[in-house]
Amino acid sequence: MNKTSKIPVVSKELLFPFIIITSLFALWGIANDLTNPMVSAFKKVMPELSNTQASLVQFAFYFGYFFMALPAALFIRKYSYKSGIILGLCLYAVGAFLFYPAAAFEEFNYFLVSLWIITCGLAFLETTSNPLILSLGAKETATQRLNLAQAFNPIGSLMGMIVAQQFVISALQSDDKDASGALIYDTLTETAKAAVRENDLGVISIPYIILGLVVLAIMVIILFTKIPKTPEEDKMSLSESFKKLFANHNYVQGVIAQAFYVGAQIMCWTYIFQYVDNINNGLPENEQLTATWFNVAAMIIFLTGRWIGTGLMKTINPSRILMLFGFGGVLFSAGAILLTGTTGLYSLVGISLFMSIMFPTIYGIALKDMGDEAKIGSAGLVMAIVGGALMPVIQGSILDWGGPGFADVQILGYIPEVNFSFILPLICLGVVSRYGYITYKKSK
Image (cartoon, rainbow, N blue to C red; front, side, top):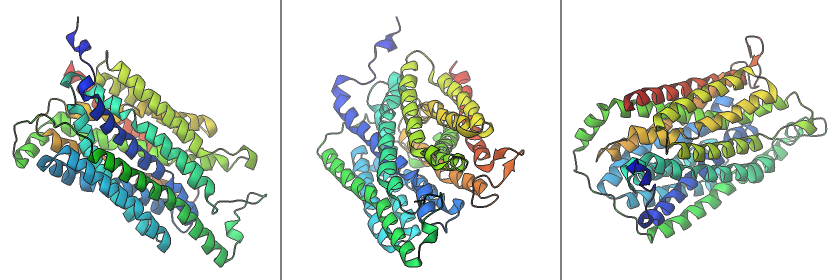
């Protein structure tokens, strides 16, 4: 009998700290998916923004990961994982509270700075929590354990999506329409438009301010929670760590795959709103679709896929699962491009099933068998989240090809530019599938 099958994913003595750290995965999931619909929301509240400018919401949000991941790794290397968590939560709360003055000044750039500070905090949390979860148990079950912890991230994401829909998008007045389907905002006086703008920016800021209060409460709980110290590895110099990491092809390719995966994820969950808006252009008012509910369906599928994938890893090589899921994501991305109407939308939603296991699986494969350099290595994988900053801006520029609409240009005579823009997730998921294939061959 295989002895590794008897090794628990999480031992009883480490169960409570595992639960506490896992709660952070849900916490950054809320921030991620509360922010994804804001690209569409800001475009409606500030119609002077182009699609590319509105996509800077995602650039500011995910660039914080790239900027702060390495400083976070150096910080926890010198101090402790717990110190990194506390500092990350502090930055998270500060960024959330800065939404209040941003709304008061009605300045788009202030919102971007607030989002950037939030993700500087999230960079600390992710750089800390992922390797800490890997270390809370046997090496043989490390990737499976991280998939288990990451399975709670979509729960937070679902909460973020629902809050965005119920308390932000549905409450905006900028996109209210009259009986004929025309925007009421366009018929208002300048004074009335200013009042609507002030109201809507306040609506956008309130969930973030409340989230800041929740983060502070969780920080207090963690302050009084004993986080076990990880086993001390032989310390190596920083230059030696970098040298060892750059010589590790498995790791370098993992960082590249992670950047492409995160780019695909953020594009699929951000531009589903524009995809649905384009479908709604051809539908009567009473038949129009609500993008958030399709995004929620995608997240439920994502969560289900994460649990299924975690279970499959008990018997199937994680690299093989990554390869197969990547290939499935490519096929469904092609469907989102080539199929029209709701059929293409269903295909877009289905991509989430295949993305579900990618982040933690790439993470676990890339950091496999590392010692002290794992702390710096973790930073590289978190910095790779910058893919979520860069790719949406490129996709937004595709939407601007023919003008402010989503079907101003027809590729091959029938593919709207919003559909064609999903060629970017297709390419990204192809890169991930290739990484799964390469590491699977090596593992055999």
